[in-house]
Length: 177
Image (cartoon, rainbow, N blue to C red; front, side):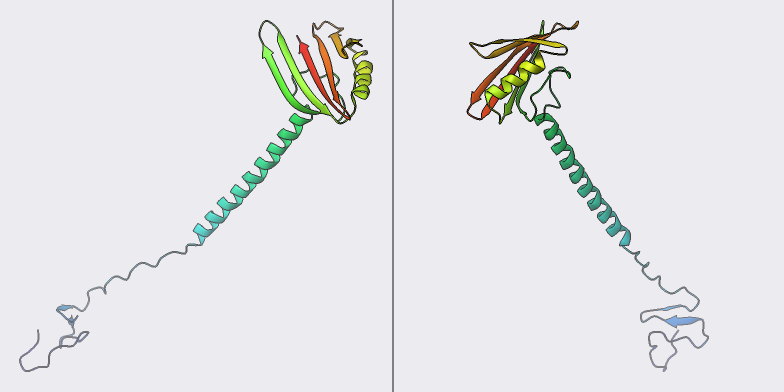
């Protein structure tokens, strides 16, 4: 569209009739839309909220897991998860050191507790607590073993063996149902 003898068109120059514009390489219709601009990128704030929310949930899950596990350990060591019947007397302050339950033709529950009291104190306590209520006992003075059986309709019986070592006593209970 350039005429002879006219200076070369400059980018953005309009044709004399106003219908064309020079883009630097060719004439394009003046009514043609301008080149599309790149779309505006959205904010990434939602991503930070998502990451923060996930981090908070992870921290909460860890705290709940720690509290649950410590509660489970505390219940086990205090005898909360025992194979002994719920009305069976357990020496106060004794902590569980072992637990084993064998199921076959009869069920055998073996619980081992540790106490910081001497064997004489623990023996006296078991003699008084197994000698009343739903339990009846007898003490073999030569071995120190306390045998017991359930008085009511249950057929549970067993023995409590106390192994003293100075001011420390291991309490081994075997109950057969």
